[in-house]
Image 1 (cartoon, rainbow, N blue to C red):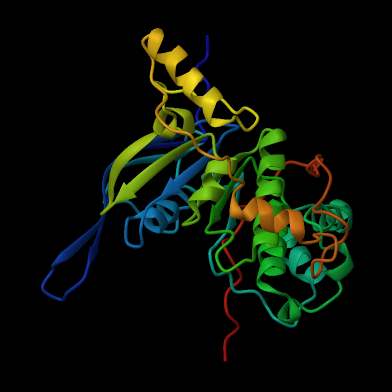
Image 2 (tube, helix red, strand yellow):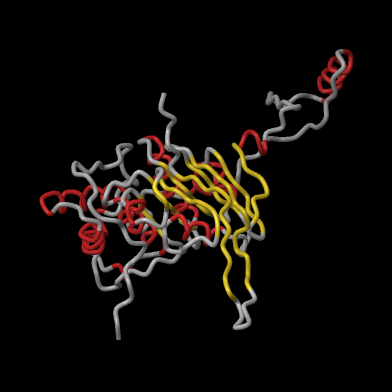
Length: 317
């Protein structure tokens, strides 16, 4: 029986950077081992300088490892072949400001080898899916931060990759844009895509991820499912209608008589982001087109023939 190949396999990854002319080195990643299974949403957490971005760059082949083995769908990350099934949205992508949304995604589709016969339809499909069809003829330089992230996601998806890497996809994005990005990530998972995401917004990670890993000073501190890491298995919460003091005391006595304790009485609270989204109309959000897309991620009918790039190079002066 064949063992499934993980989307990402990292074994003993170490990455050093020279920081002085005398050869003093900074260890950005220290003996990291992780596995991201296909079809999962995996969150990579950690403070600034913890090694998250360095790890992503090694996975994408943008940096070479000092030591260790990193593979994408079984292919070593330093080989071009490993990037044929990868889409990447960097934290601060550089896009040509004078291209329209359609022109930008079309540019990346051509770079990634989408066949000419399918190019126009494929570009339209992914732009519609991220909810930017009404703004796709506008110049990218007029887009808000949230719209830039969504057009960035469209370029990462245009060649129909199996793995999508998102580096801080909601940094600087308002709560409505953040909710829409989370929606899109969950829809990618529903279609069997694998998503690797880094974020400082822990509530976002909690909403969309199957598993998370926390890095600090280049080392893996903890890794596991959300239930394993934050679930309190020795306690249960019961939500009931408001009780008068006499009933609360009777309930406390009943629990004590059976060897249990009433540890706390709290009024349930909605999260602040949930309250915000319930009060703010998402249909009128700038650049929106009545939602962020259907549940069906657009599929390319042709195999990928070229590796995607992280972001377009800056034009020469």
